[in-house]
Length: 181
Image (tube, rainbow, N blue to C red; front, top):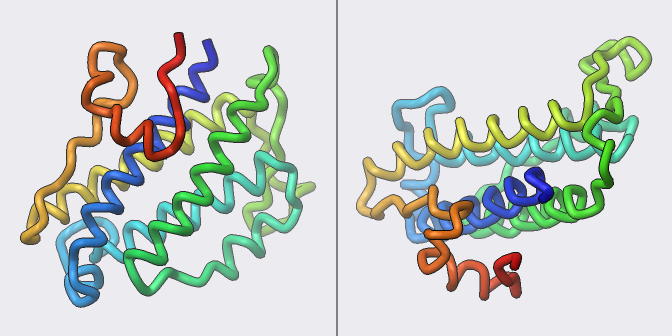
């Protein structure tokens, strides 16, 4: 069982559901100041995507990861953000699908500003665990901010347990996915 793939798929489904709800907001509500670490839905959700791009670059061995981070152009609309996040999530799912036994111990090099040679080294498994935790953390903040709008926050935690299958069937079908046997 590839637990990283399960997490990557759950991550993609939760992002699709959350961003689908956010898309119902006006542009003003998307950018409105709210109480959270990043003071708007737009800033919070763009932060998630920028971090995803950085970590995906590192996981793929792209030495330009620092410039990818620095050159990030925030999405102006929820629709643009949803499209870009879905592409990033698909890339993360594909990465996790490609993992072979033992890959979780493979070392990934990071550029934190002093160059890739001077940057930290982390095992793939820890990088993925961190990336999923980062997503969940900030997605929770966005979910709470959404609760302060006229749009009902969607259910985000029924994507892993087999007993919750009925709650995700439409989401799975939209992506052409089937439950693993």
